Image (cartoon, rainbow, N blue to C red):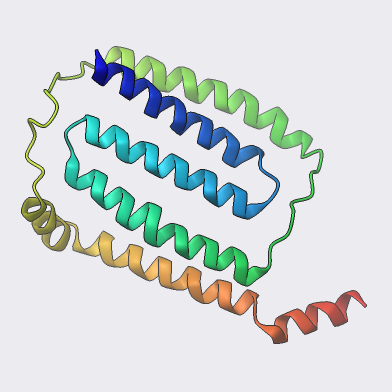
Length: 172
């Protein structure tokens, strides 16, 4: 009973943080809401018996990745977001697409049998995860690290003083 209550509390905090992330106008507040989502997910992982994944969630995502996000936000000097009405095409195509996708996912989940596994029954010790990560999934791991490096370089280029001066001369 306690596990179910904690699962619901962490789930509610995760959904509330995600909604708050979307409605915030300032990027720093959105980043802090994302930290709440990451922390809630770590709590969910703990309840499911995946202690290593929960620790990695806190260390890597809520720690390192969010520091990177905040660094990029501060580097770009992003201010408060301006609200626009949005695109009518996005509304006309996005809403039906979202509904069709949701119905399709619900239908597939209902149709396919889901095996029942007790929490913590699957092998997930750090040695097995490390072996899989650096042998079977080495290429996706390295591609991800290169994509993060490209994102950092892009943020530095966008925030460079020469680009800012050129942009100011164009407007003026």
